[in-house]
Picture 1 (cartoon, helix red, strand yellow):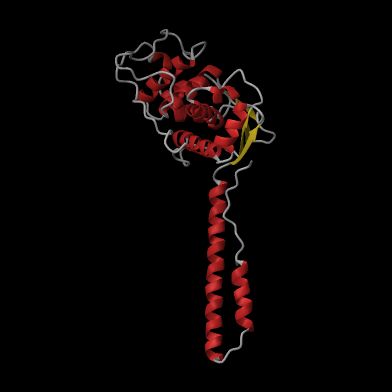
Picture 2: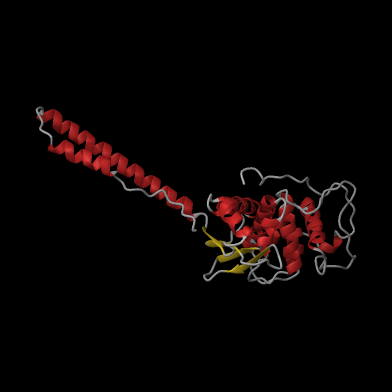
Length: 297
């Protein structure tokens, strides 16, 4: 099932055309009034035609700002496949989740198109896999440039709160889709940390990063690569701390990942060497958790 976003309709409904033919074939007893009425009708129709054309152009422009969506169900004959079809395909629920999560990530990473160069995404395929995967979601490149495939594990639909699990998993996948990391070869653990950070920002964190008194995450005084060999949640805690110290740090970090990766990207985004923040204690560093995606999904 492929999402289509177009308001193109026939310029003149068949009923209106039939009425026009009927009107021209009817006898006229007032020739001048008939001509005036005919001219007025033509003007009204022209205005209508141009209005519809303008709406169509606007709709196409709006559609061009997003991406095409394809939904696939490779587990149709299983209970998870039937549930996915009922709650996410037949009612376009999956399409709404993709668009809403994508919108959240885009607004966070690229709030100002003049200041932040936005990654181009042309097509996203959301597919329920035929069997359980090793991870909740697996993201891969599509057949064309800027195309992405998100495979969902059927096990997600077996969870007690499967609706939240689906939204959270799709959100994590869309963070990876929109991050500038494909060419740069950015560290996997750092990317995982950014995913955890944005997930927490959206209200779907696996743990609370803002517990009072916890302070900043600790690392060695000479540890420039504080994200390496760490749990993604450790990296997310430090990213929260960096963002609190230098607002916009995550966005600048993402912009830095457009090209070849080097460790100085983190320091450049932060404005100072990251190791100088290691071990620094500040009990007010973490932002509060705000759930913004649950409603309407």
